[in-house]
Image (cartoon, rainbow, N blue to C red; front, side, top):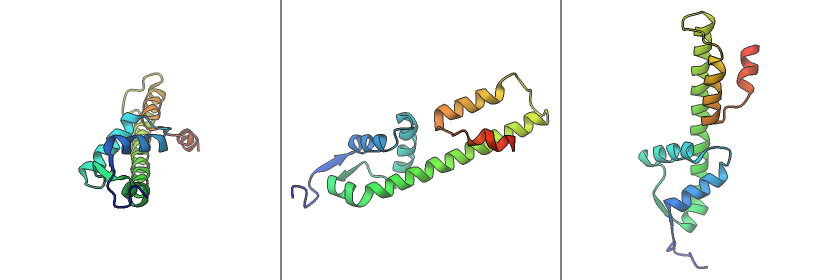
Length: 122
């Protein structure tokens, strides 16, 4: 076993590629923001051994990223709902297509699914 003692390094570039391939539906820049946040919070290290990453850390980091994405989606949906309420109550200017512009922007940045519009209609 070549990496028995954890002697082969797995640098941040390789970690990022692994994360990108796991989360193909999100842009690399979006994932980079989350990765940077995890590094600042000392949850993700800039380097692991290959065996350490694959055996101990990968699944934990993937879970952390999934939770981060979930929180970001919830925050975005809350923000959109607030804007919609303000638009409906005429508290902000209702420009033609504003809701769709906001939705499309967030959708492109965060891959918000179409459940949002079905929630509004109900």
